[in-house]
Length: 221
Length: 221
DNA sequence: TAGATTGTTAATCGATTAACAATC
DNA sequence: TAGATTGTTAATCGATTAACAATC
Image 1 (cartoon, chains in turn cyan, green, yellow, orange):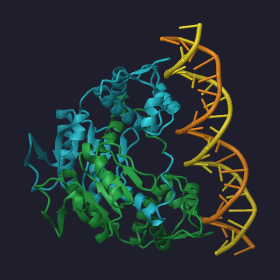
Image 2 (image 1 turned 120 degrees about the vertical axis):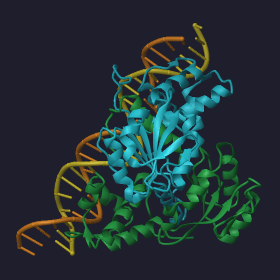
Image 3 (image 1 turned 30 degrees about the horizontal axis):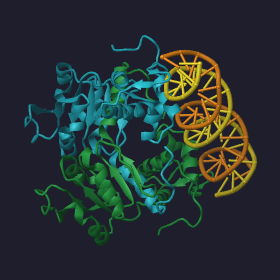
Image 4 (image 1 turned 60 degrees about the vertical axis):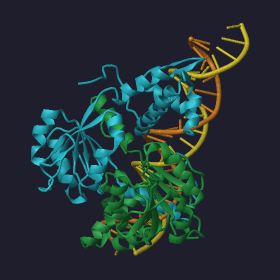
């Protein structure tokens, strides 16, 4: 059981999301050899308020130095620790169709320490096939592989019809966080974290503005 | 130039997103032969408040009947019109790598009326290749094809390094809304709508909660 | 020290929810 | 009519922002 011990108040979802964004920015700054950065400088890059940057960080501790700002390398390390990016997570990928295989090839995940350590698919034509150094398992092997490989997260990339069923089996097998790409909302018990990423809802949001004649100006946040 | 004429106040981003969700739910209800639905019934399906459902709808007009609720078929049609889902949108897909080709095959887009009408890629090995009934174009053909095919939206699925450059060319060519899957934030002039869908930020959000020991309970909204 | 920038408190803003008159 | 449910106003809640004492 990781961290806590000294309380962390309930952190807004948007703060966590911004933390991700800050972390990347800091990694770039570090590459560029920048040593310190102020909340003002950080905020400007994302059209945010400097108080918001400071408040986001203040949920987790005091990382800055008055009169100076933040040490880039130090802050990046702290944020990576907070986000759990200072370790490797073992990820199950369920569904190896077009989207599933694209996600498997997507470099972004491995770069942040998310290692797809097992692939599952119900299609008998796919089960047993080798994908790089992995073999595609049938879904019934879930409980065994979750234990054997220490899988903690799952990416769901199956058709809408089977998404809820697959999810229930993931949760039963002990998976603690799920990223769902199936074009349907799925539900989980409340000690499991779930993020529904419904790709076409994103496009529908855009078409709304086009349908209104684009106006409406970019939303403030 | 589409709609307006009678004012629409600034609509919160989250309202538009929920409109998408209601629309799908209504389509399902209609398939099941349900004739009317109340804001209460609709809200329960998504753990929302019924007042919120009514308020979301009230931005656009009065669609309900007191004492009855909403006619499913009528409300679905109204919402589809509002979201711009009552017509077909011509979409440019830029980048035909793993993610790009998965998105091209993704049925969800076409189902909602988003038709990928042109594919662009800078890789000389890909330019000229046929993909179903389309041919992959080089980026320099953008302005011509935007005009010829009436492209209004673009999906960006290129590497992080080229995302901003590609975006600038899309905007210059007259594209009005962009869905960006490249793992970097891009920026556009403020009369263009942009949605950054950074896949690994979603996973990072999940790892945050795992790193804290999952607790933190699912966020209220 | 003087200047800069933090961490935090208080004010503001916006979104969610409760409550209810209107009305089917 | 009596019961149900809307559309809307007012209250609540939470997140963003301004302001500033603390301090490097």
